[in-house]
Length: 325
Length: 260
Ligand SMILES: Cc1cc2nc3c(=O)[nH]c(=O)nc-3n(C[C@H](O)[C@H](O)[C@H](O)COP(=O)(O)OP(=O)(O)OC[C@H]3O[C@@H](n4cnc5c(N)ncnc54)[C@H](O)[C@@H]3O)c2cc1C
Ligand SMILES: Nc1ncnc2c1ncn2[C@@H]1O[C@H](COP(=O)(O)O)[C@@H](O)[C@H]1O
Image 1 (cartoon, rainbow over the protein chains, first blue to last red):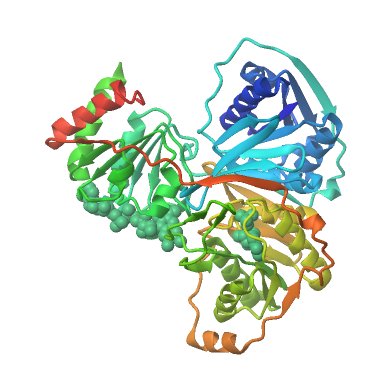
Image 2 (tube, chains in turn blue, cyan; image 1 turned 90 degrees about the horizontal axis):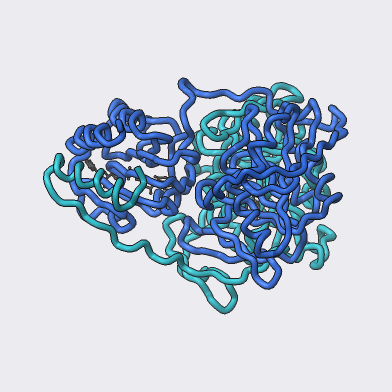
């Protein structure tokens, strides 16, 4: 059996965990087994209906009033109890902020290996084989597990979401007993910047600016583009972040975030290896740069050699034309 | 306030990585190794806390003899003590093993600590697993990917980065924290620090000494294959004046790439 952890944030199911469930359903088919989902939280009554369409046969709801505050200690405890009971062969998490925080704690509790940030999974001779980029994407490593359950976190936005089906299965509620004094650290608040900005890791389109943007005020040009493009967010190179033009949250690359949007547009970014590490798994890459020799053009699907300040206004007009209807 | 910081020696991010196909390892020859960038933020934070609250900063690395270089760097930055836990196992892309070693080293040799500091991930392997695993083995609270930290007596507040927001954590000490860029600006080594670090003795512990048998340290993942990813195909260069080029680009994105 494959078990997929479905992350709930502020009462909502995270899309990246539905991707993990979709992948779980594909592997379950290969292994001729079933895929189940598990949610941890305090109030989750309406959430199962959002999860079933992506292939889950059973959904476990692990409930406790304390789960309203995320804590890896209590969440891992709850997951371990379920895993020991139902004994899945494979457990998937999304490699989201929560998935990365929680999964190693679960793996350590069970004393098993964990493969992080996988970009593909496969069934080979009855075992799970995963592939993940390492060394800034310069190497792909394929791994199998010597321990069970085989636990992996899956990189958001890479693996396709299943076509939702009108399916419904069994919901199994479990009360989890946790002593409050067992929890020594917990989240007390989620603080969002102004405007509920979409994170670069979750955006379907990332519009990024580098040193070629010349100054902080010009990031408004990129914000104007994201205002037109649906599901988009502003990204940046480290040079721009280090110059203080934009917050570190937006940095893409080896010491920033790893993004895999459908479309990545790089304005005035040279394409240093550390930047490529964070965006080369994007499905379509566009580069706008005035230097025809810039390394970014080597990875770009579409390259536009020119001055970004001249290109952006026209791009805005063209996008407005087609995205209006 | 006694703090242990865990640091790893990794290939410099610019390195061209070559693979030994027979052993499924990377070829170390010709690589330039550095202190993993996030670990530098962890060391800096420890030094700042010591400056504010007193106590000791000990840096520990698990790795081969060559990891001495990164320990020396930490001493030169201002750490009080450094220890090498000698381990010649190559990268396994699974942090369970290293976490067991670290937890055991802390239990055996550093009973008296308030904080265990880490980088949020070791650059290269990018596992992002050790801090949470060590926290679990030690029964400690954890906050990962921290960009701001406040310690007040026996409790702390840390802000960690999540998607599009910060998550504020309250925790009790002792605790495990892992550093994200933005937490601080790592200091440079001073000449005085470098000279002092040269003279400082760095004890070396063996896995035997930590009562860790080989069996329990077997890697839990098996490397099947390592390869360079297929290169991206050369793309199209769009020619023309800005107005015309922008129009072409949008046309291609809509009708050819189908991404907008
Ligand atoms: C340990 C380490 C970690 C790092 N991590 C990261 C990371 O996470 N992310 C990251 O991005 N970098 C990272 N770097 C830095 C990286 O090496 C590069 O320095 C950085 O990516 C360069 O940013 P840039 O492309 O914006 O600037 P530059 O390299 O200066 O490039 C600017 C580009 O803009 C173009 N340009 C200028 N004006 C215009 C114009 N008017 N119109 C069009 N084009 C124009 C120029 O031709 C040039 O190609 C890291 C470095 C190290 C050592
Ligand atoms: N061999 C090691 N020795 C000491 N600390 C380590 C070692 N490997 C990892 N760490 C610490 O754990 C963090 C996360 O590592 P990883 O789980 O490998 O991504 C690193 O930033 C270090 O602080």
